[in-house]
Image (cartoon, rainbow, N blue to C red; front, side):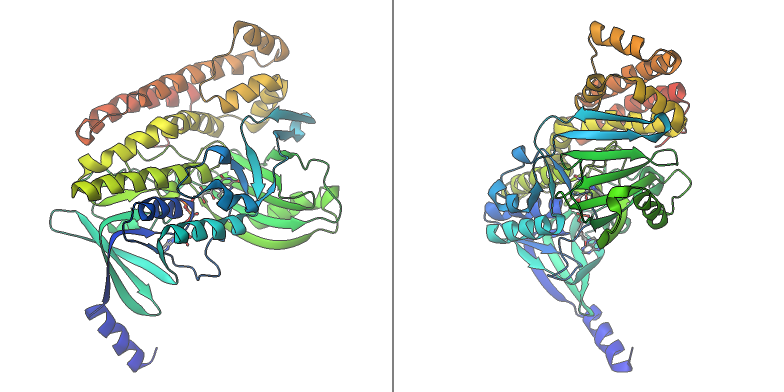
Length: 471
Ligand SMILES: Cc1cc2nc3c(=O)[nH]c(=O)nc-3n(C[C@H](O)[C@H](O)[C@H](O)COP(=O)(O)OP(=O)(O)OC[C@H]3O[C@@H](n4cnc5c(N)ncnc54)[C@H](O)[C@@H]3O)c2cc1C
């Protein structure tokens, strides 16, 4: 850097340009766009600050499977995102279990689509823009500002080498997994969850691959266990000839060589002979329970920045859309009451826990279990279960097997009864955990007591599974 450039940078940080808005949203991903659209629809000033360029924004590492789009928040109309749905014929999961030489086809309830993710990313930005949000690209957030009482008052960012400050009544952090903003805020007077470590995350990588001939499984999401514990491989058909192929592993385990391991798997599959890779991306994914609290005075975290992801499937688009909309609606309440305290923002936490947070926290129990069991044993057990039991187990959240199904499960899985018994003990605890999330507190001051009881249930879960504590 030349002396002149140094001087310019110093000048700009001493005397930064300042933007004043009602709400500043960091990140133009799903959570940020739904939050911004919700707030702009109500007539408030909202700026979305995104580090990527206008061309690159919306290009996100993803498996491209979208579940539940039929009931997405309407801040961005569904007709706006539908053109990105390239495969709406997908209706089941296909679980390949090579250890057992078995393939299980399991129906997936609800609307499911595989999408052109970049196109979807552009369309939600367009939707939020049309609602009235202002997008500031090439702007990297580097700091968060707080007043003497600990209330968040804005952010500090770099654009084209210049410092830009954003003054806002509320900051919404939609900056994705392991958001940098959270390292910058002093949360000592807030309930915001800081019990977050990289080991609770998954590292994932995907390629978009074009194959010469249509694949036979273009109506299925294909899953396969990887060679490491808590690792998995997926093949999701965007069209009959364009496949999103990827893999990931929980960061507690020996790291996979993601690029090489995927290449190896692709080479072993005849349908990928002559295939061409057209796009590659990787990222971290929060395969953990949602943050106990994603609020602080003047601040809310949404989507991956608050772990609003189904920890067993890695599906986070729907959670991000809902969290964005709920945070946007609560921001409007706070602006109208002229009160950005945690007491006012708290309802956002409650709505997340009520809608999907409690269910995701109870599903995380099975993730914890998977880190403590032998992959081959687990696959042997899964291969022996009837598909409908598994579908119920996977999608209903709480699994209340009927006596007939229980008997069928026991008979068909002869040889795995010890594991089944352990699994049911774990399932009972997962149900107890979900019931406890139904009692999520109505005010921030009651959070600590609620956490104590939750941690007691978690201790039992670690004891029964034999897993190392995750939190
Ligand atoms: C490999 C992989 C596969 C996945 N597969 C699926 C799937 O098939 N289905 C599904 O539903 N979910 C899937 N997910 C999860 C899903 O992609 C995320 O849950 C979802 O994108 C979260 O949206 P978000 O808006 O919270 O964050 P993101 O989409 O990550 O958006 C965050 C935005 O913030 C910006 N940003 C970050 N830091 C800064 C900064 N300092 N300054 C300015 N801007 C910043 C980023 O550039 C980005 O645009 C997958 C994730 C991965 C990694």
